[in-house]
Image (cartoon, rainbow, N blue to C red; front, side, top):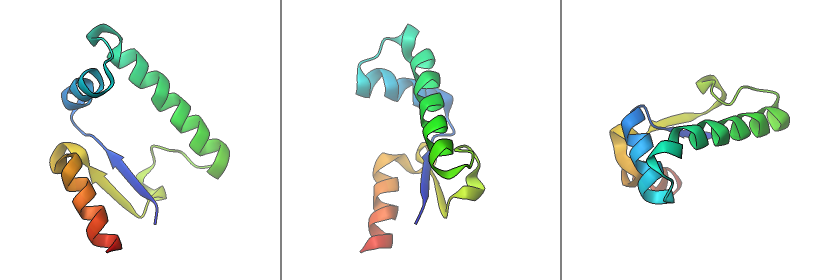
Length: 80
């Protein structure tokens, strides 16, 4: 099963990057874009598909709506 976990809330993404990874407020967006680009390139190199195209996944979860724990609960219920 191919699962994509996204966050639709830009403020929540920014806050999580700063809090969870200890990245400064001023660098958070730049670093997120850098790593998103690396993820996108890696995904494309291995699948010849676009990382951001949700049609490439069996399930797409929104961590802004579900929270991290909610995403984990959904996935655990699928595989239990």
